[in-house]
Length: 600
Image (cartoon, rainbow, N blue to C red; front, side, top):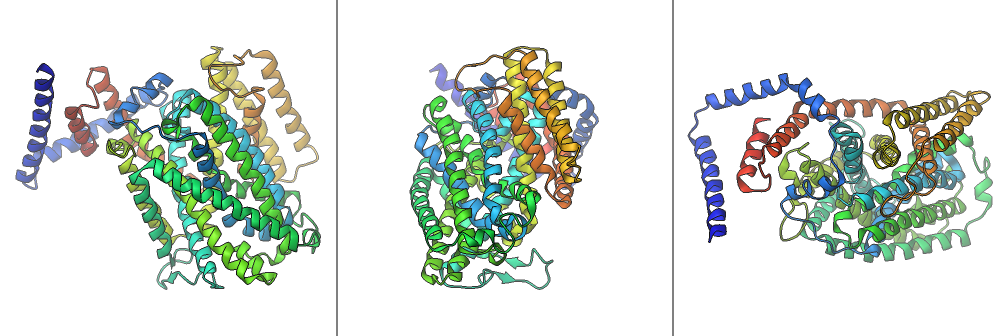
């Protein structure tokens, strides 16, 4: 009876508060002094920004807090229905459709030539090293936040937010670009020669934004509603499509090797017509293809037996995908000389080039299905990221809510689906692809740094100065090596910085002790794999073009301003409420959070 009265009183207070808000809103004249009061309170909050930054910028959470206290802010738990093969299928399905069908043709034609498969090998090694870092974190901290959560518990709130915002940018832009590729391959499946046939050109818009793609928008909205319904059913659909997709890849690989010719690999200008530089530049671009395994790590709250399933799912998906990427790229270059490879719908047009028109239509249909599978996984992952960022109160808290019956982050899924659809309607792939690569590489770089710091400082309890100095020297040496390569200083720059990089890693391993086997799965041979991941990510970032860094700088300024104007104040107020014993998951605190969001 006491419990009933307590719940009834809370419900009564909740609805009374909501009624008061509604009544005061309806009865308030336009010049309401409360609006002026809210504005003055916000100005007062802005005046406190330096103090709040000092308190919140480097604030960290423990893994236990992340797993329990923070997760409860979503109201309901995500449902653990997935198994290891679901996770592997999600990783493979998320990567396959993105890379081969979107980037291979343009990289082979303009950047790397027939050696594009070597670009995939280099990018795959870097992705594998990064996936090892992700795996250890996901086993130790099995939450849906991925890189955001890993960096936040290690380096603090701001760097975690910065990484999370970049991951979201990468997801939204890549999903929009991939959805537009879906339209191109689908038109090819119906026998259209021009990839732009199904788009609507608008004369008044700027070039690159003037081809409206309504099929891409329809696909994104359809997948958004599917993901709102259930994670398990979406995973089962992805598993079916992924199995079919792998069989379809096998057909392309076998056909390419059987009917192609090795002469196309060396003619007209050899295996690497653009030199070693072209191969490495191509590796930075095709790295865009390895985003999917990151989506798999965000399923940590929905996987059964995460300590065993996560390593198998994440690492296995990267290895399988890398192998298929290399074979697909080789089969394309077997069929067509690199200078005749089409930049768009390259695999469909390659079969047309050899006279297999029926296979061209089949490839268009199969590629479309693969792109649907990759979009499904990527959109699954992006919603989990936004949900966990909402739990941290860095964005409005209603984005963190999990629907009690479906167990999915409904609000986050809908918001990101609409954003992705809006970008897919206007923006061409060429405008966003390098922006996507720089964001991905930066986040993977931060995760590798965070793993070394966590293993050597937080777990082993060494003084932080030694590890921070090591990370600084390693990054500086990697930048020096990369700039020597970029500025053609191979004679002295590459040997100097290459030797210094190996020396720095070896000296740190010898001098600084480390817990070799923390609880659960752990990265072997530390710090070598994580350090090499840092080096490769820095190197690949420096091969990108200048405009990618310019656009990234604009995005970095925007998200930093959002943190200063909203995020730091929201988390500061949330921390104040928790320190005074206010429970964020009860109804009255939900009203307080609504008031906070309105005020800020």
